[in-house]
Length: 324
Picture 1 (cartoon, rainbow, N blue to C red):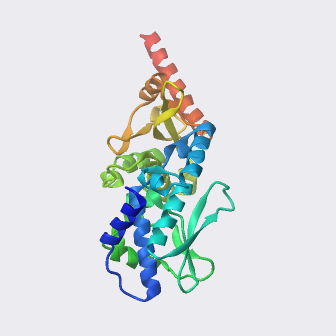
Picture 2: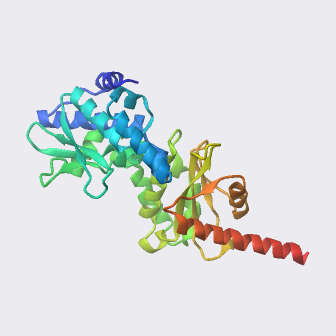
Picture 3: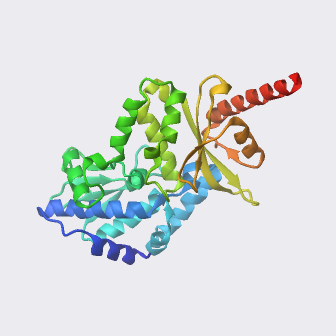
């Protein structure tokens, strides 16, 4: 879809909002935010890739932002192109905004919506993509500065009005809260098994891209486990490489760091099935031998933990074979 086609879709499907001029402005901006969020995904090359791959994705984005129709047609984009596209969509809706540079992360940018009364809303759609794709409560469409023009209750009511949820009980956050109670007395590995294999964990996530799935499961673990036990659940990306050495077919692995290889069950995300699938240490070793790259430069410690368990398991198997 071109930018104009996206705008036409938003305008034609947008509810006939009521309220003050400012209320309507907020609702229109949020409706566009959610609709555009459902259409886009974060580019795995930047999220999972090595320094070269990440750099390539950023350079492409810097060029693409000058051609909004080119950006509009892409499914996978980064914060730079997504912010420029959202700004153009807002402009087409008569809503003023500007692009803000993140002071903490030099490459990260997001939108700030300036309402007609002079107050503002920060809208970081890239950070909210995984929430939108999994129907969690959006976290990064919020008041900018000291004037809270969008308290949580108001945001929830607007999201009901635009059809994102029927009621606050429909947020996946509600399921996560109940799941936390359900596994609170279990060991990390027992709790992880229930989380990974529960239908409600992945229900409705068909077609979700790997970047959003990765961030969703990371958020799920941090929400369900307390701080100490969350550290015992390790997660890292995986990739295959093509003939030119470029990373492709990204996925990810999650496993419990139990301290005993006999109790370690790794889970690998299946893009085809849209869920985490349990496997064993031998299977991970086989996949690695067949060319699956485990982790990246930021996850060496986590990968090292799993490889240690894989080695211990392999030695134990060899010992059993020798004993026979």
